[in-house]
Amino acid sequence: MRLQGETALVTGSSGGGLGAEIARLFAREGASIMITGRSKDRGAALAGELRAAGYRAAFKSADLSVRADCTRLVAATATELGGPSILVNCAVSLRTPDDGPVGTVGDEIWDEMFRTNTTAAMWLCQEVVPLMTAAGRGSIVNVTSRTALRGTPDLAAYSASKAALEGLTRSIAMDYSRAGVRCNAVAPGYITGKERVGELDPRTRERFEAMHLTRMPTTQDVANAVLFLASDEAGAITGVTLPVDGGGSAVRGLTLG
Image (tube, rainbow, N blue to C red; front, side, top):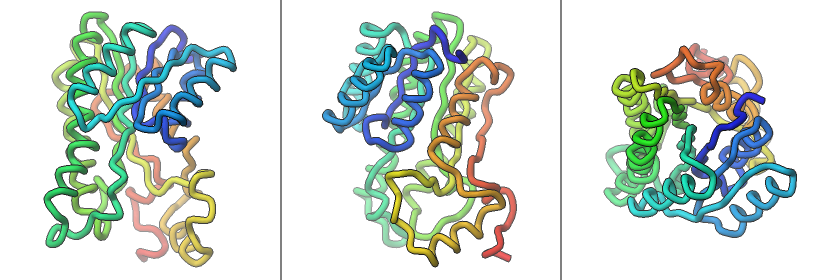
C-alpha cells in the first residue's frame, strides 16, 4: 500500500465530493485519515464507514475560516491518529455563485474566498510544518483550480484565491524542502461525479466536453493525482502544479478554435 503508516489530514472531506473521494482512496492505501468539514452528520458517517471497513479514521468538525479551529484540528489529529505526515488542503468556499467580475464582486465575497481558499490553507500549513520538519518528512498537497491557470468569466475572487494558493505552494516548497517537506498542487478542471449528475444539460455538456482533449476528469482522476503527489512515488517532485483537466489548460479546445 502506498501510504502505509502515514497520517493524513484531508480538509473539505465531509461534503461527499472530491475531499471524501480522497479520504476513501488514502484509507485504502493504508493511511490513517482525519476527516473534517462543517457537515457533522456526513463527516461522522464517512469516518464510521471507513472504520467499519477496517480502516483507521476519525472526524473533527471545524470552520477553517476561524484560525483557532485550524489549530484545534491539527492538535486533534496528532492526539487521535498521530502527527500528520500528509496535509491535503481541499476545502473550498461555497460562495462561488456570488462571485463575479472584479468590477462588481463585493468585499465580503472577496474576503470569504481568500479566507477559506487561501488563508485557511496557510494557517493549517503553519500548524503542520513544524510537526513535519521535526519528523524530517512530510507532504502537502493543495487543491487549486484550472481557473488559476486560465481566465474564467465571473470568478474574479475565486480565481485570484486559487492563484494565490499556487504561489503559496511554491513558497512552501522553497522554504522547507531541505527539511524534508514537499509541497505540490493539483489543479482540476470541471470535475464530473455522482454529486453532479444532471447538472449539465446535453448541449452544455457537449460544449464542456469540447474544451477537453481527453474525457472530462472525474473525482477519482483528481484523487489519484493527489495520491501520487502525496506518496513517496513523488519523492523527487516539489513546487509543481499538476493540472487534471483533460488538457484544457495546455492547449485550446475545440470550442476555442
